[in-house]
Image (cartoon, rainbow, N blue to C red; front, side):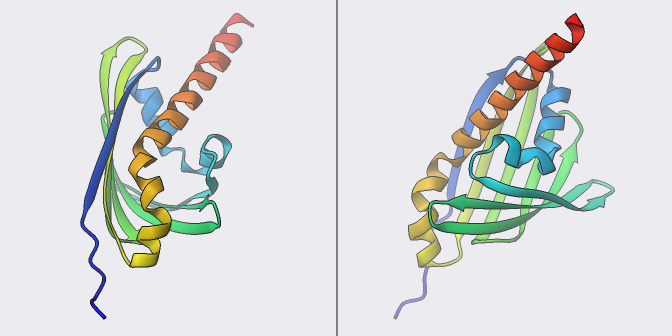
Length: 158
């Protein structure tokens, strides 16, 4: 039997949100709140802080599959978060969130994810989902940004 070989895949998605880069940066780094607004995320945990970022883990469900992923995240405050796989269902995975200010309370957010599956079973199970992952993730974060913006506006009226 031939060894499994998975070609590397890269996907990205960009969106504009009505929050500052600083506010979006904080939402992306609030890993522990992910289960509140990402439908397939069961748990988010901050594992360890580092001088240049942090290590975090999330658990997610995709249909019958429950997977756990840990990443080492390098932060450049308010402009980017780069993720590197520590453990999970991939042979290799890197991702980058970038935030570009478009004016007061408006920024462009991009999520790019590059990965390679560790085995054929994982590729078959997760392959269709991972193609849309950046868009689904970014839309979840965009919805959370809108919710927080509404809450902030309501608080300011009080």
